[in-house]
Image (tube, rainbow, N blue to C red; front, side, top):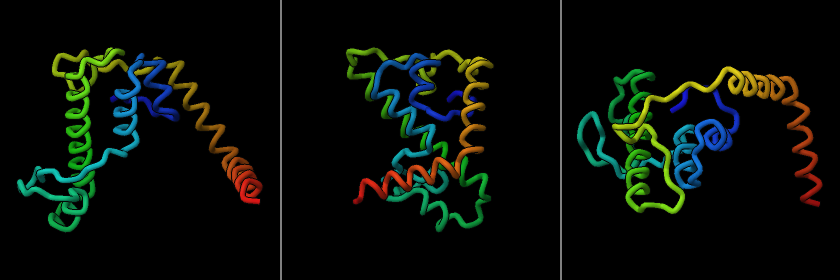
Length: 147
C-alpha cells in the first residue's frame, strides 16, 4: 500500500493510483482502513483453524507483544485481501484491475507526489482545527433530521 497518510482513501486510489475498478478500489480501501473481515482462518502461529483470529491471538497467544499482534493481524488482512483480489482478477472484469501488492510481478509502489501529500496534510490540519465546529454542525443536523 501507498505510504502516504490518506484522508479519503477511495478518492486517493482513484486519482493518484488510477484504480478505476470499483471492486478493487473497495478492497484496497478496506485494507487501508483496517476493515478487512477476518473469520475462519488458520492461525499463522499455531496452525489452528479459528473462527475469530484477532480474538484468538489475544486469548490464545497472551505472550505476544502488541506490535507482534498488530503485525500478525495486518499480515492476515493483507493475505485475505490478496486472495479476494486474485479471485476478482480471475473473473476478467470489464474494467481492468491495476497491478497491486497481491501480484508478484507488480511494480513497486511509488510514493504519492509531494503535492498530494501536502494537500492531504492540509486537509487534516483544517479538520483538527475545526473538529469541534464540524461535530457541533453534524449534531445539529442530526437533531433537525430526527424532528
